[in-house]
Amino acid sequence: MKATVLVDNNTIIDRYFLGEPGLSVLVEVDGLRVLLDCGYSGVFIENARRMNIDLLHLDWLVLSHGHLDHTWGLVDLIRLYTEAGINGIDLSRPRLLAHPEALVTRLANKIPEIGSLIGQDKLARHFDMAPSREPQWLSERLVWLGEIPRKFDFEYVGPTERLLVSAEGETVPDELVDDGALACVTDQGLVVISGCSHSGVCNIVEHAREVTGQERVVDVLGGFHLLNAPEARLQATADYLGALNLESLHACHCTDLAARICLARTCPVRETGSGLVLEYPTNQ
Image (tube, rainbow, N blue to C red; front, side, top):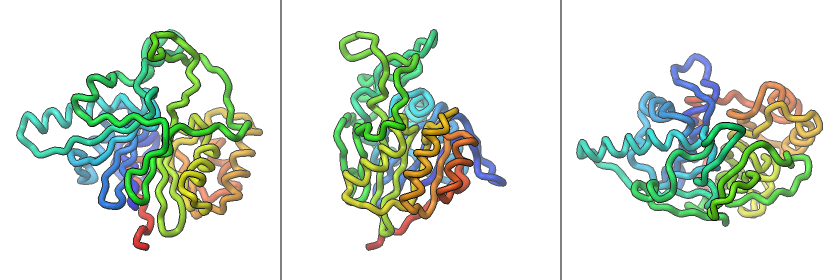
């Protein structure tokens, strides 16, 4: 399995890629090419070009959740596909997998939209829509975890100022039930790839173990949403992840410096950013 970070808040040192407050990761396994999230803009496309990565032939587009820093790049991806079609360039039609609530309107304070700029109806013109609350196996080894059960009390954040507009047109508190992740069964154990971990990175990892039946976790890559997190939550998260005896931990995107320092006391935290390429054996 190969995972390429197309965009992150940071960039790999001494490599000439772009960063932005967003995340996009290309996962390749079992002959499939799966794009997890599209970042905030077209930066992930520019970085893919610099790495000579073809985004016109994807099998799956997976949205970890509906926030702007993971979905607004959809506009640029559709532009890329549209221009390819106009110019007669061969391209595929990916399937789009996300929680059913990932594409609803979201509000924050006085900001009228922090969710996807494009609704499901228009996206269906470009992708084969495959919404799901339940886990979905994309290949023999790669699974979308679906809606994440909230098991650990220390990861519960509580109500925020964020709201969403439900399918019935009601404005309700946004509990971010659409937040999900991918997990891949490699020869050495599980690799978990999250977007923001609003549902809690420990909850995500625990659910991945239950869905796959795999106890061993070798790496967790993605945003952990540990921004100005209370010390008690940081320590509980570090204790849980440290007990997994990971081979590496690639905390990025929405994980601040204080959180990484805390995690590094118990986990093998590694540098992460735009341009990072990770490979895990999947030969057995």
